[in-house]
Image (cartoon, rainbow, N blue to C red; front, side, top):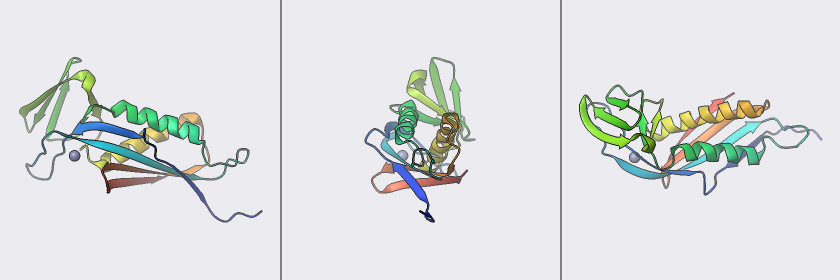
Length: 166
Ligand SMILES: [Zn+2]
């Protein structure tokens, strides 16, 4: 059988969610107050068929990795470490957060997820989770994948998609 089409597989499950607090900064001097979302992730991977299994990537492994990535940031305050307007200092017990040099929040360290991104927008979360997924997939040894697409939704009908070609 000749096969000219391409395959993509997607997962989005009830447990691929994270209920997290955040705030973002805007251009100029505007900064949101702390609030939360029930985020949901959907991931799609594309690639060649694994010739022995007739699938692109094992759903069981993909779901397990994604669940782990969501659990890491579930029920946390998401804080960006690369935002020039937000200063985040973690002394191991408490995380102190200042906005443009003025103290704003203090959280227990265990309640925070300190993320290497400039703003906790769904765009940046989608890129971060894609990079983390990619690292895990590399460890699992999936040589045939050609692209990853990650959608992060923060409200019904409000989401961002990041796509990377491998
Ligand atoms: Zn928000």
